[in-house]
Image (cartoon, rainbow, N blue to C red; front, side):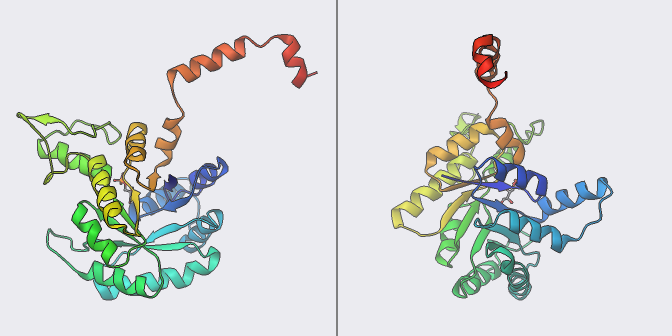
Length: 273
Ligand code: E4P
């Protein structure tokens, strides 16, 4: 299983790469905003191009997804070419993120698919974002996507919002098998959780031997990472706070305290004279 880091913050990317566990980076406009806001709050001057180039250098040898901001085929294709031409020469690791349905309303816009198809035909790797349905993932793959990114956490948010559940934290666990509400399991057209969405995309892609890789995105907690891993999904893109949380366990900390308190002077002398 590959692990990508889901952030645009250089310090987080650098730190996570130093742990030897990272196989790629995903960004989106909101993550870039959060990185830029943090720099501004520290009074640092921002040159966004140089900033992105630094990310690409740190991640050399691993894919970095950069997202377009347009909503029409013409805009997205133009922006994708600009991103690819400006940045891919740095470390040859740029992947272009294109939304599956770039409409701002609940209407179909096929400009996403058209852009995915054209870029893929030209050999530019595409990560298709905002995947909320198995069917969307199938179309993205058919159009030539290198990656599809189903948003697990946002499906869980959506299911909770459906029943007016508002007082949950973004990182709260949502059961893979869904939750019971009024004698039935809450669902979004048969999908009972974000992990369920990922699992079903994995099943379909395996059935038909699709070559597109699946990046489980919008991951919010450690347990969700485990459940995603069990689906057989090739990649999980994980925010820094979740990567940090994975290490924590009561018994690990207790074990550490015991080992450290049991160190006898004779053993310590091996390391410290
Ligand atoms: C990554 O590709 C996605 O943009 C990201 O995982 C979204 O996560 P969020 O739903 O927590 O914002």
